[in-house]
Length: 193
Image 1 (cartoon, rainbow, N blue to C red):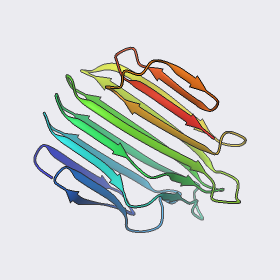
Image 2: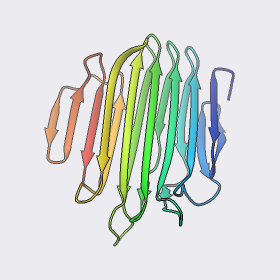
Image 3: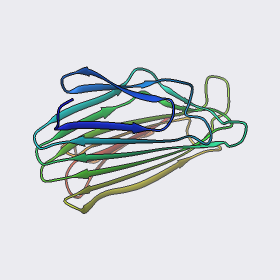
């Protein structure tokens, strides 16, 4: 990474590995996250810089003996002319687990972000756990998107959300799928199964 691309992780079971000049992978170093874990991820993309963030495998969220809920908090700052693409493998929330994710994206000027989040409730043959995700996006300190989604009980087993702040696709909807243009430009695409 350069001074224009910075990533920091605090918390258990996750490390950052550089896999290219403008690419990094998040690597699980232990099982989890587990109930009681709190992981913080901080990403900074400077002016005109590009950064691709991926992971080597899905995350399997487990309840611990003492607590069901785990939390991941991500903060992404992208400066003017910067581009952040983040597409991680699924987060699998097992039957007894509860998991919360909060993603804060702060854009400056004509910064661009493509963010893909994929949640699967339960492993094969087991009921799904509980998941709550919050996505909060601003551009030049003005709101672009504020969204909270909660899944549990009889809700869909899988959710894929794609935020693209430069996409100009028109509104569209089909069974389990919707493309929603944002007032400030870009789209939010949501698919459920």
